[in-house]
Each structure stands twice: as C-alpha cells, then as structure tokens.
Image (cartoon, rainbow, N blue to C red; front, side, top):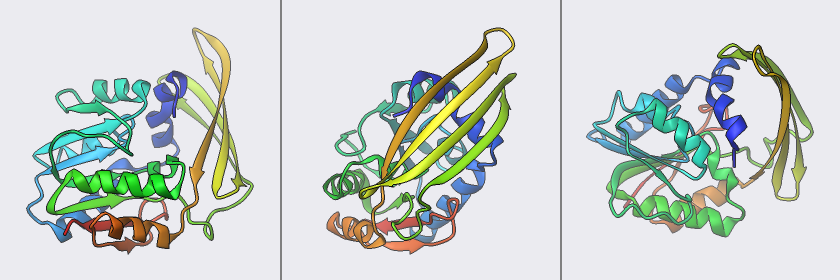
Length: 237
C-alpha cells in the first residue's frame, strides 16, 4: 500500500513518465459499451488518486471509487469533489448496491495475496455488478511476460519538486517484488529520500479466467491495451 509520501507524488509522477490515464480510460469505456451500451454507472475499485475515475466522469452519469490506502483516498477526494469515494478492501467490501460496470485498473489486482484472494475479489466485483453489467480488470504481468530483474529509473519535476525514482523488480516465488527508492529535491525543504516495497502476484491467464467464471461472469481477454498488460472483461450472467 502506498504511504503518505509517495501518494502525494504518485499520479503526477506517473503522468510525467508518460502514463495516459485518459487514453486508458477510453479503452476501458469502449470495452464496457461494447457489452452494455446503456451503461450509466461505474465503480472504480482501487481507484488510487482518481486518475481513471476522473475521465470516467466525462462518460458515465454516476462514478464512485473505492480505495484501501487512506493517503491515496485523500488525494482522490481533492481531485474529484462530489464523487463518492469509499475506503475498503477489494476482497470483501460491501457497498449495498450494484453498478452497471466495475473496474479495477493499473494492475491493482496483483496486490491480492493468493489465488483464493483473487477469486474472492472477482466475486466481490461481480456482487456489485448488475445482471448484464460489465467487470473490467487489468492484470499484473503473467509469469511468461514478467521481466525478472527489471530496472527502471526516471527523473521528473512535480509541482516544483525534482523527483528521482529508481526501481528493481525480481521474481519472488509466484509473485514479483519491486523495491522502489525516491530521492526528492524541494527548493524549500531540501533533499530527502524514502523507499517502498511492492509485492504483486504473477497469476496466469487461466487463473484470471477461472476466477471470472467462478464469479458467474463471462470472460474475454483483450491484449495490447493498458501498457501491454491487456484487460480481462466479463459480463455478469
């Protein structure tokens, strides 16, 4: 889970590194409308700071979000006034209603800890989806597409602060473990640094598809979108 420090620079830093939330949201909307043209409401699970939920408000009559990290949720509330945002765990939340579509993007599903938890999360999404409604989930990398020992590094400027980010990602059993270190230079506060570790499950395509079917959903895999990780899209029977 992201802490207060990285939450503050999270979305802006990813935008500066080239992440196009608007284009990604359009791809997801296209897949939703292909299956439910009249979709009017959407719940964005693991919404983070609201990068995808914002563009969704331009398309859907009703948008809500759910996020586990309170620091991320605070920033989403600043960015999306008037959009109902809830704190909750993707594996077992209960909002007491259904939506025409439920999304879980930016590979957030990888943060569940096992295949049992993956199935629990997808079942929870399905319970919050109206009959005939759509569930769209962006996976983390598959075991065969994951790049072991991957290193990345970027330097960007965010709100006048220079942020250097380096990461090293390795295989950790049936998951990946990414160590991220930040070095920030603020004209007023000087130089500081912090680090985080993120563990994400490397589920197979078959595991995702089985979880969708177990939850009473059809399932299609759309390759190429969402930074190349693709998108699983299902309809509640």
